[in-house]
Image 1 (cartoon, one colour):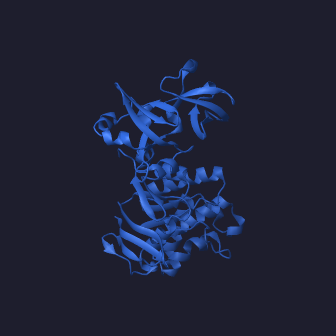
Image 2 (cartoon, rainbow, N blue to C red):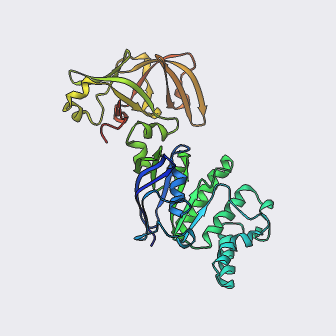
Image 3 (cartoon, rainbow, N blue to C red):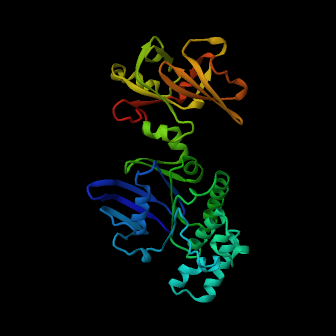
Length: 369
């Protein structure tokens, strides 16, 4: 059993606060992804857990024990780095065995673990080769194997796929997931790639400027973002947003109005709550909706829709990305290529009101999360 807790974890470099009061509980065998833009503190958190960076404030707790002052070599964790960090002069076997030899593991145990790990990772045929004789994907497997043979309590992975090409990234992330499920080890995985996070993580910790924005399952992050930043960061193409929106109740319908646009929100899932909050109709808010919530109204119907002009159409296999101008703003719709308009067409966009999100103008927080 390996559990990890971060309690009020913070880190300063000089006067700059790079990680601010992060709290997280990771259960045994959970695969947790730290996601966010470059410089948001993901790797710093990983390095504090590993003992490679000193904690400024808060606690790192492994299996119920506070390990802030414990040296890295005593923490029983294995870290996989972005740059592989293999010893160029050693064979694959010796790279895999290096950590075990440093721990004075018996020779027969080393032989057994290394051979088993190499076969598991599909690099058994390369066991006598040097890293320079391997492809990028094979080197990454060696780096993973070096962590696996130690049988650690916790895996820490810092953007391990960033040096691979697109096709190999997909293949290797599947292999990593299968491997982690098989060996049953708790994993913290750092990436800035939201596709990796959404496909790999049991839960995602989304960070911005060192502050945790949301901790949730991939489905929860996508379908119910805590704030505007989360909504726009997760999802490709990103969420569309309309600012300076005012809500208006007219008869039995709720309208969102902004800069000459009127959008029917009568199907909004929190309609009853809005009716009980008249103060919302006296201030501007931000309206967000994902590209797949848009549709093109048939026969130019304008009721409850948004007049727009098509700027660009990109057909990507089974989907077409349709970029439309509404006033001075560009928004994106995802539709079936067979139903896509052409560049230059004037269209009317309808929005599935059940998939709309309303955010506060100041904080950006989701009003109904």
